[in-house]
Length: 356
Image (cartoon, rainbow, N blue to C red; front, side):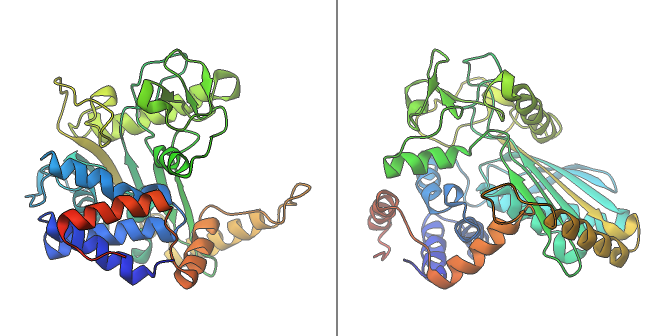
């Protein structure tokens, strides 16, 4: 088990060695460790190798000049200058919040960025301001549209954070696929199979192999197949892609630059880098914040009172599992899969950083 501070400092040191500034490295480490604490190891330390390989291939800019290229009182388009995704995303969400303070709502589309970790981190930034936070992003083209075997889309997550009063905030953070791509990578590292309905082979046949993507397979959209609603997952993923990329001028669909080594970098581009979309909505632009948060308490309490199905202990509100995970992991420590630890040790050795 690793203490939070140890892995935080280690992660920060890696990105400092890669050329990121002190503040940027701190932001990056914060997002990585937030994923680990919230029980999303798929977006935590396992992803450092991907970023490191991108840096070695000179595909990310560790000293970016992030600029606003278009704006109105409540909207903006940000160019991330090919930054590490966390850096461009943090600045973009800060801008959305700044605009919401003045205009009631703020909406920022971001282009020329990269993978940014867990989407929930950015939506949650709005909570302290008595705002609702929204975050979308497109991602590696590894997902096939319904009825297809072509890898055209990403896992394209949606995250929404809504404050309450006495109750913990409502935080929904989910991929538009049955599983995040990183969870397949974790299963592969552990030598485990995955349930059918997550992935298919290159001919479209169901597979339980988490490494199938490396041999031409693809992920399925939320629902798994048409009978179980994959067309709805396809629609959700499409909406995320359009808001993140078409709005911002980033690459969409199959043209999103991959952050994994087994996907080729296409010569054709339809925009700049990876795209994100951020929103901040000031509650008191709609009604007094105290009234809304009291009503959110009532909403949460109402749903908590739903009768559990046989064999279930309680009804969860979005955000409950992650909050409980944060409390437990901060006390117990962060456990790394041996194969992930080996990857980190190899990186540490190359960069001459201590890691044990």
